[in-house]
Image (cartoon, rainbow, N blue to C red; front, top):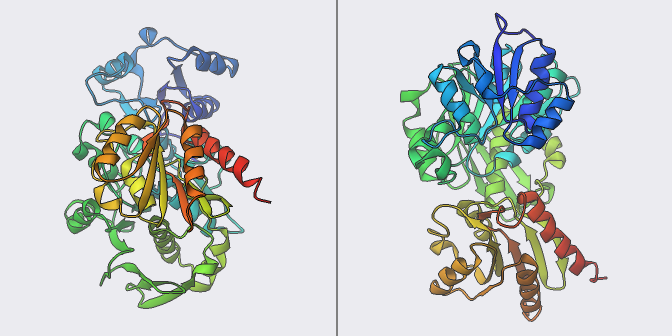
Length: 463
């Protein structure tokens, strides 16, 4: 690993997992660093790790080269932190920890994955499928190891699979991905970005530093990505590969669905590869096939043949809290989709099943359930809870959906089970909130684990 051409000065703003990792790495590199977090507990923790905590009022930002912020810290809106204001006035470069890969000249193969939904699953699929004996495949960025740890623990021939959020991509300066993947784009995080155009532009930063030797993979199944692909060559230099799970593409890679499995049609190599459904270990829903198809194309670009890719299938499994099958009780199948924090993700879930009892609610995103109308065909009953629960209850009733509301997840869960047991057919109880978790839970993981506990308490009685 080569360091920066000269010693640089860094201000780390936000000492969560990624910020703390970056600070400890930079300290070991003898870089000049200042650290701050608005949370006293995090400042104390950093002090215990022998990091210098500097009040930003004492820092001369004209002598700071980079400010590394936690991804969620906003640097564009009017209501920004005084630290960001000072940094901007002094023309400090504002970055996320991802940029350290470029600043420290790492030559590792870098695969970037972004999209409104499916980033984590695709990142994990790729990491699992590329398992190699002589080199590590490291999932990092918004998932897995924080970047400071990655740089410390990696060798030059290791492969980085980087899940990149819109918050991180908005702060990209020079980082170049050898392979970039854009899965989908729908409205999300508009309170952070200000408007949808800004959100799209942040996603497009995954392509901006690529050159002619790089590859870009775009799934054209949604209209926003389709438009980006149509004008891609006007704006970017990399080689574009279009993929689709819905339509045939003359110059790309697409899926065909059969009764016993799926066929990947690779028009780039004139190949057709059949995959038996029984050999695919992930939940077989449309958006997972999008993740699977992107994973295949990465393997194809890295010269893995059909036999090698098929051998890796047993390692490709779905992630926790992403439409995860968590149990069966009598006629009821339970799915935990707590990661569905926006309406587009929940739409994917309810489009994937029939005979649905839908549990939803939490702190709503901008727009609430607007646009869900056409996806309600398979929803037989809805059960809403939390901060948005009453509003969602009224909304769905107006759309002709029977709905029950209670403030707590436990209550609507028991109502759903009690009602489903009276049915004389299979019922799929889908916990797909379409909201953030922050009204009642610390994060979507805690919320999903609560649902899984509720399922466990029911299913343990099945025997």
